[in-house]
Image 1 (cartoon, rainbow, N blue to C red):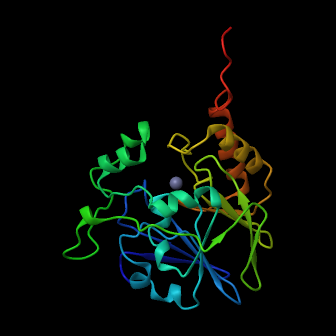
Image 2: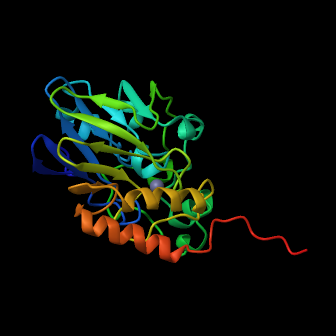
Length: 258
Ligand SMILES: [Zn+2]
């Protein structure tokens, strides 16, 4: 396995892959779940190093990649998978090739990152994956979905299954995956333990608030997010309630003065 990736076993056929040399803002989790029949990989990393080169074992059983949403840090390696699933509302963005750069200021501009963009470092990686690597040549390949998933769809891995939850707001096609048998929620960028980003082009505060309300009522055992550490239900509900408080009064149609 390439030192570009770090692999952390969580037990019960679950492995987390991360990219330690990627800046916090873009350091996303790749969740590798093993079923008896097949594997699912939730998100596909930044794509600086090919997953196939870095973690060849990941491809041993021809896994289905489920893309939580169309942002570079989650879909950089998506092109490497034979089967790629995602929500139709993000399909066009994926097919067009998502905005991507390792140059912080350029990325902030490409993403239209607004206030958040001011925190981007000069370079989004703190080491090169190998001699001769040119960060300026970094792009994310366009991705066509081979399977679209809608709210309520089930993905069967054999011995375990995932239910798709469409939770828009961060992007129109953001999805989370709930393994009802264990209560584990794979949440992408819908929710992680940090400031939830709702001001990118394509973000929708009103939709995000509805998603957060749904999260407040979700009886999960653990959340495996798109960024950072996993957390429990209490923390999930706290983060969702905090978001609802922060955005109270936002996301509604402004009243027209007569
Ligand atoms: Zn995102």
